[in-house]
Image (tube, rainbow, N blue to C red; front, side, top):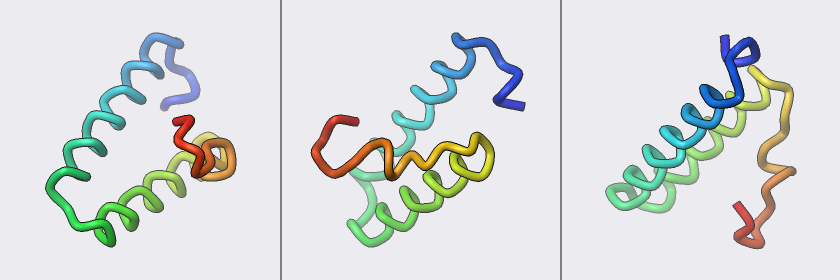
Length: 62
């Protein structure tokens, strides 16, 4: 379970997710990518209790 993982493991998992999303973005249309991003955000909120969409806004900080 992600919550019991070390900080290093969590960061590694986040980096893999970011890489996969970046790759998907280059091969998907914007509607498909937005749907996948929404699904990822919902999974993060469900598993960790963090509303990532609210934490990381549209200003390009994340």
